[in-house]
Length: 314
Image (cartoon, rainbow, N blue to C red; front, top):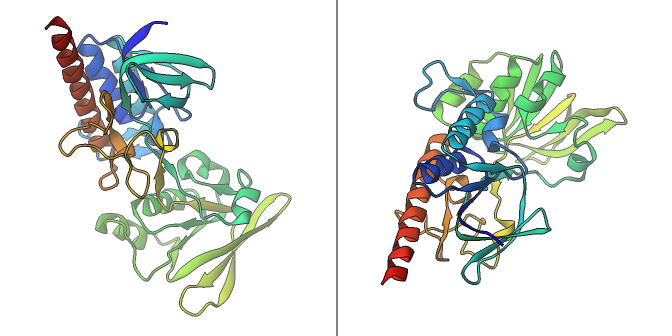
């Protein structure tokens, strides 16, 4: 079995940036894209806050650009999923697509985070029949229709304003009497005439029939009073869960499942394993901070490998 020097798990801004730096350092990295090649940015239409794009850029196009740059320097990209890991000793072992075993000296984890769901039965019942966690992916199907968005952060504000360009009306369901979104995003929502905010409101149930979603039953979080709105689409924007399931029991995590790293580095509690991007960042969770930590991860891996080689020589 051939042993790799660097394996990168994940293909968002963090994974591809790590690949660019590792490849330029002559480490011939292998990158496994995971289940969502390109990561969360492939579900974002307009990226306006990434430096170097004064007019903004389409998310999927930006990820293709990063992929091409990584490949240009020799990164080997595989469309596969790392389904299990064994970090108990050296070399580190990875299982690919539940069947192939891979050994490597270092691993850079860039698995990101996934959208959270409310956990109500109707959510699953109407999945792909009106329920979505990605307005950019599915908003086109609801042109001229009424839709609901649940959430109170920047993601919810972005989804709502995006859908408002396509849909007749957008109902924004906010659990409290205020939003968590940044001031500029809140202002965009308030300035959009076809967005109606339902304050102090929770989702009781999504209603529908064989054809899909027809409405949402709401509940007032103060009085418990229920009401219903008619919508054809229901979009979730309530945050994300770090994709760290396969690392449980092997790497240190916080109570939410984010990987813990040594402050000022990308080092996890296991030698040779580094965590970059949203999988280890519960605070910023931006494309630019993910890319920056991807650079750090590659440099940390390079230093680790250089130190190991020095030990062997001596």
